[in-house]
Image (cartoon, rainbow, N blue to C red):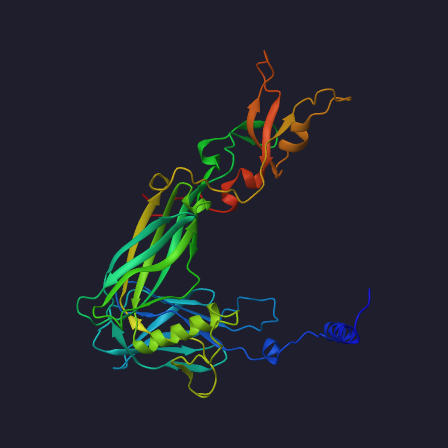
Amino acid sequence: MKFSNKFLLYFILAVVLIDCKKPYNPPAITSPGSYLVVEGVINAGSDSTIIKLSRTVNLSSGTTNNPETGAIVSVQSSTNASYPLVETSTGSYAVAGLNLDVTKTYRISIKTSNNQQYLSDLVPVKVTPPVDSVGFTVQSNGIQLYVNSHDPNNNTHYYMWNYAETWQFHAKYYSAYITNGIAIVPRTLDQVVYSCFANDASSTILLGSSAKLSQDVIYQSPLTAVSSTSEKLETKYSILVNEYALTSDAYNFYTNLKKNTEQLGSIFDAQPSEIAGNIHNVSNPNEPVVGYMSACTVQSKRIFITNAQLPTSWEATYPYDCQLDSIWFDVPKSKPPYNEVAAYLIPLGSGTIPVAAYYLPGSPSPAGYLSADQECVDCTLRGTKTPPSFWK
């Protein structure tokens, strides 16, 4: 086979280009800057105000969570009233329902442990209309949840939501037995670890706007999708949706933040842009601060979805590869005799859990137990047995 000189030239050029590729690490990846991140809203109603403070981390860092602790945080009004928040957990600051005067304006004040003072702009209180409904549609591969809302006074136009999910799920196998360190004994009711509850929270920015509509109505704004094979739909699922009314400036901030954090990665996505919030370092106004402080009342609605409401063909996929193994008191044809139950099931802390006893024909005593790995039997590894207070 003969190759033209032009072909050989292209081939050599391609090899050189491939061989000369070097990794590019832009300065932003290792930038020493660590900027304050402020999350939350001033809740003007009867529910708690919760503000979370953290610091940005470098892309090259193995750390993803960098809470800002030991800060002094308060809500301040335009009439100089002050409402202090208390650090209830690492980097999370809270105060009980403030029931603020909605005719006043408010801001957040933050003094960090290194004596840097941050203030947000004074913002008006937006009165959030009630959530009309939270619903779902059944699709071929799962359910799509949505929210409906409207403001009859035509004053809202800009909405934001977040949600908290809770669901009941089962272990793969029901274990009727447990070891006490000496023998295998039946589980008491308190020792059953088959049914548990788990939860999760929204991690994306959920926005809606009726500004371009003739009426202030939000119809079936998407919240989240749940797969037909998800354990969330195995027994019963609940979602609590919180709704916040925003100013146009706050809506634009969160829209820009969403574009910068969730809608990048392909050539068709928006280009990264600067995100300007309304929180500033008093002594260094040019320091970037990530966050936007809003003040509003908050409206919530919870719904439950049971498995009976969904297609009968849907079946949850267990997250582990599970199978039952036979564990014998006396392994057949073993010379010398070998007691697997004593070796694998009776020791405390064993990762192999007895599930059910099995018997040989005519024998009143079990010949052994069917067993499985702990993650296939014990739901408390991924949840809690205690039902939430709202569960029904």
